[in-house]
Amino acid sequence: MGKTAESVWKNCLNFVEDNIQEQAFKTWFIPIQPVKLNENVLTIQVPSKFFYEWLEEHYIKLLKISLQKELGKEAKLVYSIVMDQKYSGKEAYTVKIPSSNKEKMLPQEVDAPMPIDSKKVKNPFIIPGLQKIKIDSQLNTGYNFHNFIEGETNRLARSAGKAVAKRPGGTSFNPLFIYGGVGLGKTHLAHAIGLEAKENHPDKTVLYVSTEKFTQQFIEAVRNNNRNDFIHFYQMIDILIMDDVQFLSGKKATQDVFFHIFNHLHQRGNQIILTSDKPPVDIQDMEQRLISRFKWGLSADLQAPDYDTRLSILNYKIEKDGIEMPEDVLDYIAKSIKTNVRELEGSLNSIIAQATLNKKEITLELTQKTLSNFINNTRKEISIDYIQRTVCDYFKIPIDEIQSKTRKRDVVQARQLAMYFAKKFTKASLSSIGSQIGNRDHATVLHACKTVKNLSETDKVFRGYVEELSRKISVE
Ligand SMILES: Nc1ncnc2c1ncn2[C@@H]1O[C@H](COP(=O)(O)OP(=O)(O)OP(=O)(O)O)[C@@H](O)[C@H]1O
Image (spheres, helix red, strand yellow):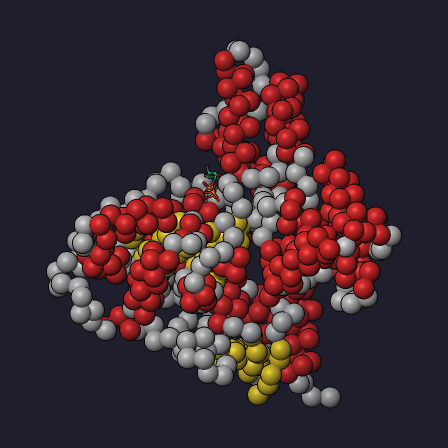
């Protein structure tokens, strides 16, 4: 039987699967569809331009080998990309681009719905000559890529940051929206991108600004009647990094001015990098038109580091400070401090300080003693998993039921209660709660929280459940 696109792709997938991690395989290869086979040219359909860029950046070598095994040395790969027409509200369409077939390459330029080359458009507000003024980028050289340790939980954000620093405004990651909980490295990564972009493109104007500072500057500008100067200044920036955009929440006038700056920069193909403690959809009191712009590029999250990353961070820091520490001590710290990198650094510093001040050797015993308070506090954190198990035990429902799609009344109620308690007892965002409890969206979680609140006010029996469960969960 002759070869078909399906059969060729199936064999390629078998080869790829044997050579990469399972999670990566599921994420980047399962969604691909074989479309056409024309002699030695295989066309595959990928869900987005981002997807295509990622494959070309990370897996091109593997794809090339697998394809050559199937179709010979002259094998060629063509991507069919489903382009989302976010800007015009028109139907999605597909574009076809050949693979670079290089082992390592820069992502190619694609016919994006947004004219990337709109740099030539003249900005009537900018006085010629002013554009190249030197500004202090406000970047902290201590926060660079070299000391930003890579791990499973930050790989996507880090790689996207690297890509942006290489080709600011030239990838589909615009804006690059980095989000994650407290102390997970958002600010560090944002500075690292700025520093590397500056190094790669010395002619570009880079500016890091916290949202708080931006807001203060704006208020000051309005007070002094130079709102326009403020806007013009920001419109001159080639790479704008704005930290903690969740602080725009509720600030209508600042959102408004940022909206105009954002549009201007984006239309000119300038790069925007934003950080936030939550994903765009969960930012409260933010204009919808801004939220939708935040989602235009790539949203990448930083999660709490896993054990291996925690250990690598500790090793890096002690090596840098020229300190020796027994392996069991490092292992103990990495196993005990799980929440975030700032706490990990803090605990390491406390141990070093204890040992230095008391002229003691760093031992496991000293470490356990120093960290005891800290660990007791951290253990009190309640996980979503624990909440789900407690609710399911209480109602005698198997945990897979609330994870399933079933709409059975008792299961729906248990699921809603689990969502309500996750909102009450954890710092997780609505969308993160939804994705962990039954793979629902943030609106479902919001609805669940309201339903539980309403029912507790009107139904005595239900209120009893809520109170008892609340006690059970918080006792731990
Ligand atoms: N992957 C990493 N490798 C090395 N150090 C890291 C890493 N991630 C975070 N850190 C360090 O952890 C500390 C906290 O990081 P950072 O201030 O960037 O967090 P953040 O997410 O911006 O926190 P916040 O939400 O409180 O602003 C910094 O000292 C940073 O250098």
